Length: 334
Ligand SMILES: Nc1nc2c(ncn2[C@@H]2O[C@H](COP(=O)(O)OP(=O)(O)O)[C@@H](O)[C@H]2O)c(=O)[nH]1
Ligand SMILES: [Mg+2]
Image (cartoon, rainbow, N blue to C red; front, side):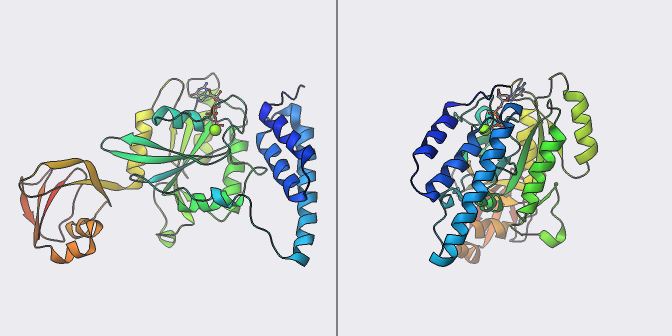
């Protein structure tokens, strides 16, 4: 079987041959591992690279003990500054359509190709939804070979996880199992819509939505059913097709629902409502919470507020403990 090596891989290999230190060699090998096409034809090569990686690591480790540790090459990757209403980390096995999805729902141009490991660094992009925006972070594929410590920090910092799988691939369960295992081994618990009591506010537990991408392909209905049987009671699963533009709006809505947030618009007395930049609050939040989110002092000075919205009298005067709902308009009086 031909290996069909990509230019990126050949480049990494060239750098490896020219490397002069073990650190450099390790970095190149890791790069080679990340970019090498992952199919039967490269199986032996991948095994070989893996062996070299562990040998060099061993060598460096034993050197480190006598000389003291070195800086980590990938540390700059482990944080993406948050923007918008929430940060959603997009994970999954190679080639499932993560980057295609991000491209479709945001206005960016991530690299997409029909060979794996096209995405190598976290790529943030904004997804508009109604009057707000979510930040999606496209990620390199999650597999045992490619997982790196910086990914753990990034996942911990995210507000929610979306796992994209290819529901037309026969090895879906295998690759999803591996993705989940790798994340679990990194100490992160993935749950469905509801975070268990013991994990409330923990960075180690993340709500997760599974997107079964590529519905409409030949094998998809059968594999979707198998996916449902194995994981349906653990995670919400939504079938989508990026290529056929199916269920994409549902996807956005599910994100909003799972985050359990509301949008509250503010207005100043006698002025128009600001519909562009709502306050984002958890479901159940009160007038006081809304005031605090603007400014701590603001809440202390607050006399009363007026609220417009569904099920309220227009401009109804309310107290600090009044519970707000999605789409409410609030006018603070201080
Ligand atoms: N049939 C089909 N192919 C898709 C769909 N979405 C993405 N692809 C293809 O799957 C391949 C991998 O896509 P990419 O977004 O790079 O996957 P990633 O590795 O998960 O980021 C590309 O050839 C895409 O064109 C889909 O809904 N249906
Ligand atoms: Mg990608």
